[in-house]
Length: 238
Image (tube, rainbow, N blue to C red; front, top):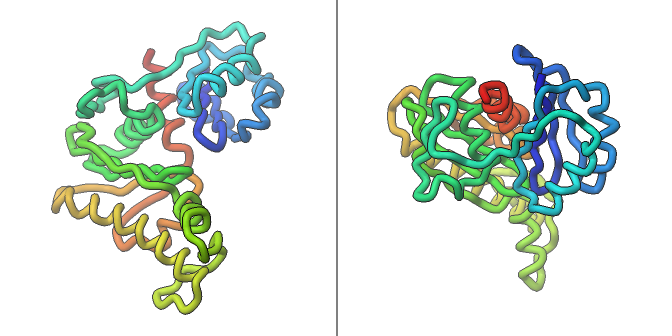
């Protein structure tokens, strides 16, 4: 049994896997990291704690402190050149964000075909896997909230929009929200088209995935906590 902890920019997602299935999953904010030990206390007999952290050294230290009394060894993940059937073609493989790396491994474990792998959270990442499991490269965009916040912060007259998506926006809030959605789905659909006519799938995960799926004109499916799926494969195979 392993405990997987995915420390993102906004939240800390966790899951407990027994080698066959997830026994539990949950999430806390970084401000709530002190509660992590109590949340996971019943899984103290885990064989390993697997950590993927993109939130910085201090955040990683607080997570470790919250589980300091646990006897299980820690395994902190980094992107590599090859693992679990995925080959990382980044110019410097170790520079790939570990959350993207774990999501790619999770995607490869779930689908055998080429895939567009989208993580739609604080940032939106759009990564491409070919049918052989090679990560060909990907894009990073500001997430939907960051796009709205940039317009509100860096312009004199635009609000932090609370509008709705519409095909023909007729107020400023709707215009901003619609523009943000169109920018996100447009980038995903362009990545999809670049894969050509091969057998392929589009997998989305993250807090904004349900919104984006509603507006995408390509076949797609939501996979909750996709990086955790990859972390489980790595941790169980270690």
